[in-house]
Image (cartoon, rainbow, N blue to C red; front, side, top):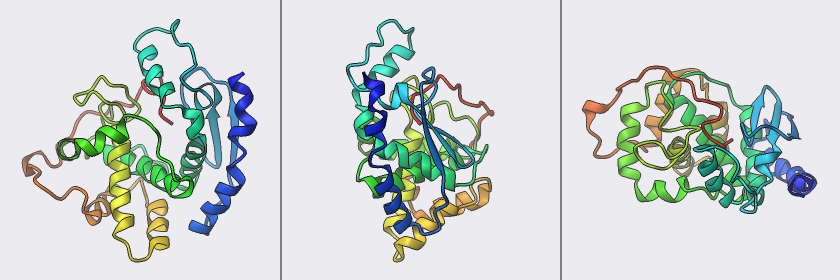
Amino acid sequence: LLTARAQLAASTLKDDIARFRRLYPELRPATITYAIGVLRTGGTTTGDKVLIGAELALGDETVDVSELPEPLQSRLRIFFRSRPFANNAQNNIHEYVHTQQQETQGTLAQQALREGVADLVAELITNRKPALPVYTYGPAHDAAIRQQFMADMRGTNYDNWLWNGSDNPFGVGDLGYYVGYSIARRYYDGASDKRRAIRELIELPYDDPAAVNALIERSGYLAGNIDPATHGASSMRNRPNAFASVRP
């Protein structure tokens, strides 16, 4: 029954992409495909192609996850309580933004900003952010999150920040999305030319850590009472497990 929602889920896409093109006239075409997957992702991209994991993206709180193993069961309960189907327009555009961005295998700062820009642009187009704990917990604990991000941002271990569950020092998954979004939002809000700011955020060379760090610095988000001794601390590379999270 929930899988039959695919047509409805895509019904806003034409208008949303038209709004995207007005916001970012340089928009390149991409294709979006819905498929039944194995709970690996609600959305992913390769080149100019978007794949939406329908078994995740079209769900809601009625999905029965009781036969799945832990910790996946707990993570999925949280995810489905956020009613991803109701947020599917945002998910479509978030992934579409990724088809316009340079890919990176770089630092936490590079990955977090890339994801946060996609969330910001999707919000500007659909007027929605994902209804996940990260966007309620983040603003209430912003100072502590910023301080830890400063310590980790130049490293390549994403375990506590991206594509993860609640098994981290903050007890909330995907806080890298919140930090990346906050940086992008601060940069956008401070820009006198909003269209130019969007172009700069989308076209940023994400595989260049110096360029990413420079934009983060210009955003002003990390300014504050941060212990300079923690700035630039790094950690060992550890690529995320595909099963670690259900975030796109």
